[in-house]
Image 1: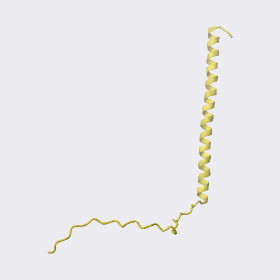
Image 2 (image 1 turned 180 degrees about the vertical axis):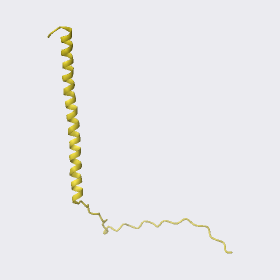
Image 3 (image 1 turned 45 degrees about the horizontal axis):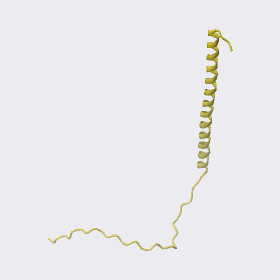
Length: 83
């Protein structure tokens, strides 16, 4: 039987100079009708959710102020004093 040689690590080849004539291929952006419709629906949903949350916050503040004023008036009437 013959002796086997020890496995030698592979040597990396030196990086050759880049050829400046070669231009890297850039894949074209594929936008189809479905993607446009999806984007429009997504933007609409984001807008409607933010508008609704702002409206709810505003109406809650408005009704909170009204409720506090009603409580204040009720307390004044029950205590018997008027402004």
